Amino acid sequence: MRNGNAVLVIIAVMVCMMAAPCLAADVAKIGIVNIQKILLTSAAGKIAKAEINKKARAMESQLNEKKSEIQKLQETLERESLVMSKEKRDEKEREIRIRVNDIKSLKNKFEKDLKVLESRVVQKIQKEFEAIAQEMGKEQGYLLIITNPVVIYAPNSIDITDELIQKYDAVFSKKGGSFDF
Image (cartoon, rainbow, N blue to C red; front, side, top):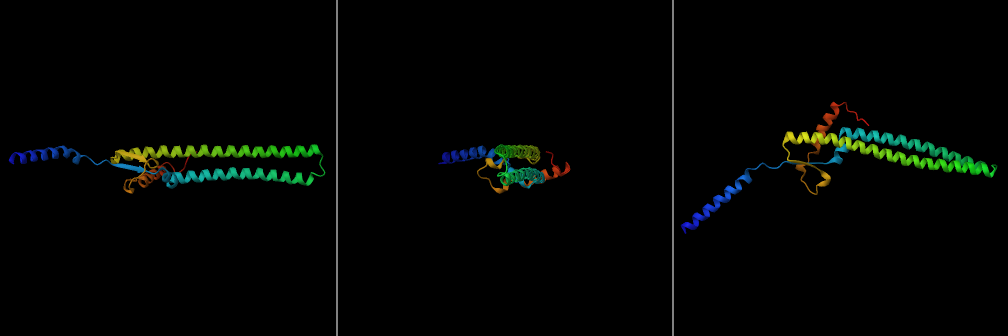
């Protein structure tokens, strides 16, 4: 019986010795960042969004001017079509079709330009906040910082987005608080 107890004690001591390094290991510090939230709520994101919207409104206004010119041409054509020669009427209709196609091309160009601008802005903001996140990770001892779209579940306690936004806004304001396009 004594030998059996001794063996159990030895096994228990060995298990404790094997488990000790696991218990003494540092807890892995992991952070999660919500990129969309950074783009929408950071100072740089808000300024960039306002500038993009301003450019979009200017483009839309330009398109509306061209549409009103076409509408005036169509009204003129309708009024004068009875007194115009067939050649003159065909010429005006052709001019209207050309302008309509020009507007479609211009609209497509504007949409493409806006997408390129948005992409550049997102890449610039992402590059800047990633540098800040790397610095923050080193300073605060994070093992891993990942972005939110990859994560299926994570407790809110490891979300460092707000802290990162504060640091990013501080860096952004030191740079003058303006966004270069």
